[in-house]
Amino acid sequence: MSPNLDFKRNTAIGLDLGWINHLKVNRNAADRRAASLANRRTVKKDYQAAWLVKAIQCIDLTTLSGDDTPGRVERLCMKAMRPLRTDLMQALGLESLTTGAVCVYHEMITPAVQVLKGRLPIAAVSTAFPAGLSSMETKLREIELSVAAGATEIDIVITRQHVLTGNWQALYDEMVAYRQACGEAHVKAILATGDLVTLENVAKASWVCMMAGADFIKTSTGKEGVNATIPVSLVMVRAIREYYERTGFKVGYKPAGGVSTAKSALQYLTVMKEELGNEWLQPHLFRIGASSLLTDIERQLEHHVTGYYSAAHRHAQP
Image (tube, rainbow, N blue to C red; front, side, top):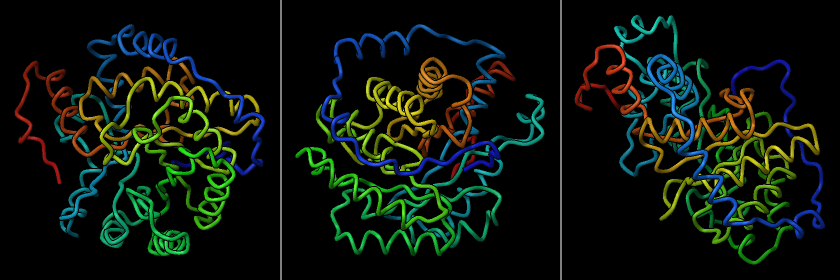
């Protein structure tokens, strides 16, 4: 996570089943509010450019493909450290700019470490990503190996059956174990919200993971049929807000999967600003998991600077 001397890391507070069992979500109200957030606020010209630069700073630049190679990851890291061309940086008055982190599989941590040399966080997906259906021993060992290899953030996947069967104690115990295995590395809990069926399940899973010490809650692996959505995000960020009000701990939020356009990034920034405030619009509390989003943002910023849209292939990607 980005350094913040005043930031107090979330710690396990104990599972409050009374609270979890009484959580309710009004689906119709959530949908109406989500539609309002997605459509009400528009930003133009210099303001839009500033918001898009903020989005870049909060991207977990990601490659999670079966054909990943060290060379691809090296290019990803170089792009993360220099996400915009020099001429665009100069036109926007930016002296420096990076993404929030890079996100890779365990086997790709070493080439990322060799390029980044501690200049950016490295997030590794873990715990039998994306299904999460290996043995607990295997999943904990995977976390330990990734931390030892140089990952400073671990994106774990929860066991969805615990949510679908209402076994909140099992989910809590699992999350506590993951947090302990991470040590000083921060842990993002991927809920795979597209598999959880209801917004109420999303709310309850969010609370259980936060009660167990998750530093971030994250929507999706990007591999589900339905990934990040505005209604799901609304439920999760409201859980974060209420958790902070009850405990004093600030938990981060990461939408992931399908966030591929500048317009969609602006919608998620709007959700964060409206529901949690400007403080959450920082990389230590907000990330966007994305692989192709940066291309569209760079195209939009070039249009802002020159008045013309360029072809996507003109913007170097890994």
